[in-house]
Picture 1 (cartoon, each protein chain N blue to C red):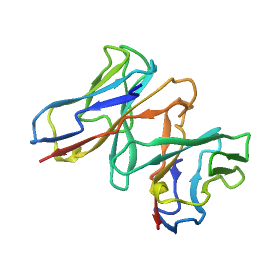
Picture 2 (tube, chains in turn cyan, orange):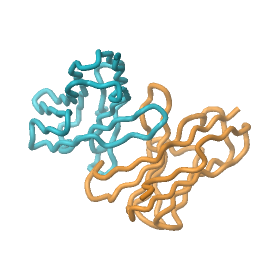
Picture 3 (cartoon, one colour):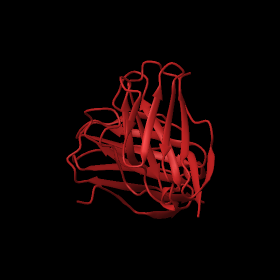
Amino acid sequence: GESVGLHLPTLSVQEGDNSIINCAYSNSASDYFIWYKQESGKGPQFIIDIRSNMDKRQGQRVTVLLNKTVKHLSLQIAATQPGDSAVYFCAEPSPGGSYIPTFGRGTSLIVHP
Amino acid sequence: NAGVTQTPKFRVLKTGQSMTLLCAQDMNHEYMYWYRQDPGMGLRLIHYSVGEGTTAKGEVPDGYNVSRLKKQNFLLGLESAAPSQTSVYFCASSPGTLVGYGYTFGSGTRLTVV
C-alpha cells in the first residue's frame, strides 16, 4: 500500500552543522506536505509546509525541498543547534483526499554540542 | 491562549479498569483528533471528529470510544483497559480547511496499563 516513510530513523550531527532529514512518499496524488517537530515530552509542532506546485520553500533556518519525480521530500536545517534535537515527522494527506494527514514514522535528530 | 489542553498528563490503570481522557481546545476548531504514539510506530489515528456531535473511526479504533458533545471538547474513553493500550495519547485540533493546516497538538497523556 502507499505510505509515508523515512530513510533514517536517527541522525546525529555536531552543533553548527547543517542537517538533512529525508522522507519518501508513494502517493503521487499528494499535493501538500508538512513537517512537524516533536521535542521530548511534548506534542508535535508544525515547522513548515509545501504544496506540490513548489520545489522549495524556505523558513527561518529551515528549507523543505520537494522532488516529485522521485517522490522525495527533505527538510534541511541550517546551523543546527542543540535546541533542534527532536523527532521530525513528515506528513501527507491520507488516501482518499481527506483533511487528515498521514504521519511518517519519524527521524530522531541528535545534536551534539 | 491555551491551545489544546489534555488531562490528565499521566495515569496508571489496572487491566479491566475504565477511564476517560479529556481534550479541550479554545481555537474554535471544527476538527479534533485522538492519536496514540508507540515507540517506533509514529502517530496512529484512533478516532476523529469533524464537528460537534460527530465522530468517526480512524486507523486503530478498537477498544476506544469517543464523544464530542461540545465543539471545544473531545473525550476518549477506555471501557476496559488492556496492557496493549499502554501508550502516549495525543489530542489535536485543526480548522479542517486544508490537510495538516493549523494542526495543533496537546502535550500528551502517558497511560500505563498494568
